[in-house]
Length: 395
Ligand code: SF4
Image (tube, rainbow, N blue to C red; front, top):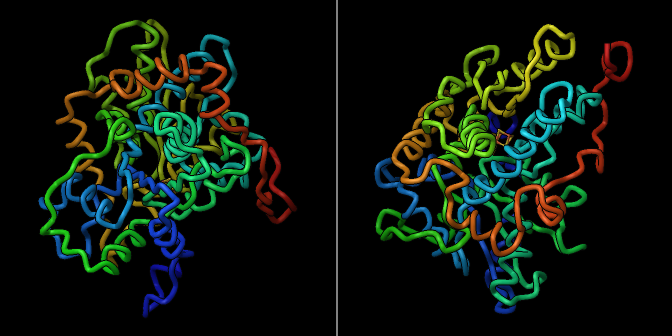
């Protein structure tokens, strides 16, 4: 709220710009950027660049011009998240685990749940967020491919989110003990300030490709940035993992939801002969209402997606601020369009994902995948919310 309403723009998120430029100018350090799905929908706002010129290729060129050695796509890691989370969901269904599995890729939501409904934190998927999966693979798998000591790599995330700055520092987010998987998380606003500080005329840049292999993504990875997208992407691959064949890519489109409306979206799907009850919510008021209904036993689901910001990351707290205008729905439609036009729309068909499992991890939920790509939500705590009767407790 302060960021939105400070009349002179003096209040910003804690800035990590100087640390990033220091790393870029250090010849001993190899710098890697990862760009989250929703950044490509909004990075041009305020940069004098028309929406149709603000292509992902021009964004890659702009980030490379800042001086990074490699520019990768967080959407690759979103595809990895789907492989792990989809497998985790199937395992829980087969084991008959009670209650819904909650998505855990949104740190704003994870912090909310741990604060307000701490007795439900065991229901969070243990799969790390795409930001953290990218960092873990960059400092293990990719460091190995480059033949570089992980401590010489500096990984920077460009995120729509302020909560990602805290997430990167949680216990266990260091696959090589003491070396953070992600060294700095910057918001879209910080990216814009970096571009302006370098006097880059982004309209004149030619489009460039993401680097390989951590730059290849499918349509399923792209829709992580819009509410309902994580659920839809997970169901596409869970269906494949359960049946061995692909559903229609839009088979689960009914869970799409603009997130601005009050309440949550609930649907029932058939998954390999099993009835799967799912729900998606965004915005913390909606999340609160959904959790309270689950807690009171009024509703029951197998799988629940929650994103803290209305509309998902396209409406994130690290996005450009347009006073008096809500742009989440428009940005979300950009990601939906990119998905619809993608040649590959299933995470399990991403050749870089297949190579990562084939050459390094083995299989989803393997011992190595569990160590690198999953986290223990009990390893850190939040102060519990305090109501009129003291700390919040299960009713
Ligand atoms: Fe961050 Fe908001 Fe996206 Fe959650 S929904 S990851 S808090 S930007």
